[in-house]
Amino acid sequence: MKFGVITFPGSNCDQDMIYVLETIMGFEVERLWHKDSSLKGADFIVLPGGFSYGDYLRSGAIASFSPIMKEVIAHAENGGYVLGICNGFQILCESKLLPGTLLHNDHQKFTCKNVYLKADNNASLINQGVGLDEVLKIPIAHAEGRFFAPDDLLSKIEHNNQVIYRYCDAEGNVTDEANPNGTLNNIAGVCNVGRNVFGMMPHPERAADLELGNIDGLRILESLVREVLV
Image 1 (cartoon, helix red, strand yellow):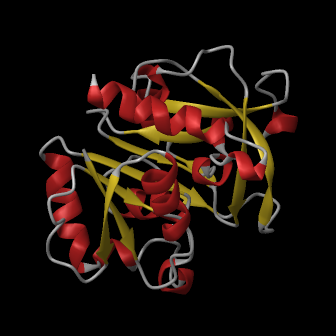
Image 2 (cartoon, helix red, strand yellow; image 1 turned 135 degrees about the horizontal axis):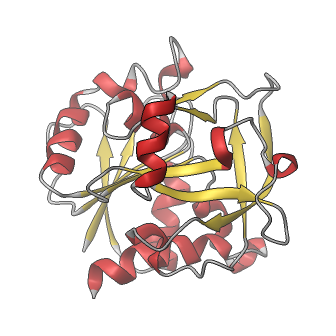
Image 3 (cartoon, rainbow, N blue to C red; image 1 turned 90 degrees about the vertical axis):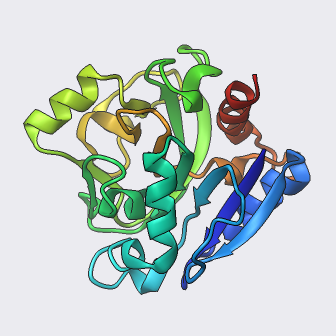
């Protein structure tokens, strides 16, 4: 399986993701540029974190019109796998590949810290390999990470098990105090109805190297590839 990692103007986590996929996990990685008109044979596309186009207008809004997004949308609509992290999640929502939107944090501040997550279910590739009682420590770094959807859409997302991870405390309790940005229902990430497009605000690629003292993020990334390769 070959991954494709897209770089937009303002991306700053593309090299982190490439390093984890290529050096730590041993996969072939195609470096994709936002102006490319081909995915160059990549099977699994990753939209990394950062500040695409300086976060002007809305985070991810301008990037959703980049030339390569036509290929990403077609890839997803044909059942291809796509993962968006932080700014990548915002781009996927702006592109309508994922439901809902990401709003400014309720405290109106950029937040960068470790948080705790737990899988909401085991219905998707990105959480099938993670126990429901496991608590993962993963970094966040965002100013617009508050997931929002109208009540009717939120009900559908919840009913369809499209919530992939929720913020929790160190003991695994999903509480208001553990919510870092005011996101609805402590939602840290969602998938589409087809379960081939995933988005999350926390950065698993920043918690995937023993040199950093935390490999909880590998649990998430390994869950993805383990199920794809079976």
